Image (cartoon, rainbow, N blue to C red; front, side, top):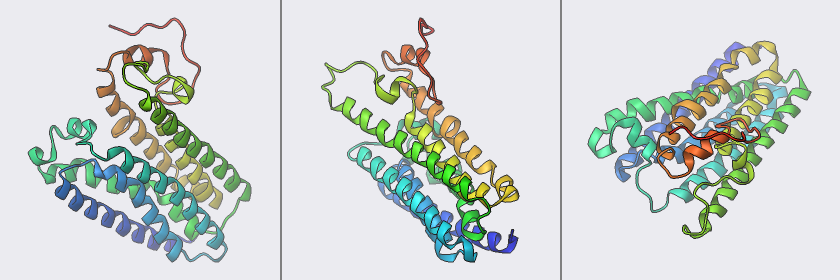
Length: 273
């Protein structure tokens, strides 16, 4: 393992992540919406992966760095497009108002930088380190790359299918549709999109980190762990559910449906009052 190549590329990736969040902060100030960071999140990973692919130096990592770039572009590009489309005509995301204690014009940009943009920039860089690793190191285990791609595909499908099912549900007139979307993938997990995200980044860790050897795998193991934590606890499922639990029918749905990992619905379970 070449530590120098990895560290140089990691520094370049850090610069790309910082640039992403600086631009995002400026856009948020102009639009008075912290939620623009959700679009920047996917695009930031694309930028980091592009920097890693262009600057990667390991000769026999050439094909893998472009593969990793392709995986990140498909995931990040689709995510940014989907979130941007969903956000058109809407105000601030309630999750960020809850996190910041108010809207951006009330709490100030400094608080948003400390609690959202800075943290997400650091997380973006840290989570993307398996991409950096795979772009700077030779491939040791080819089968692990294949397993990683398969897991990445599972994640992308969960995200895409889950988003399409939810969009179809929202097209039903409000007076005719069920109180809660509990069909398709949503029958087995309350957050198929977040679960899909986790699968994507565990797959990228396999293809970029572990496939480079045991030591690179161990060095980058906390990266998908951190992404999973963000998806479940930080700005993902737990934060969203504080709002969702106020909606009619959602507590009962939550009582019978797994929050994250897809599982068969629980039978005979009643929501707590």
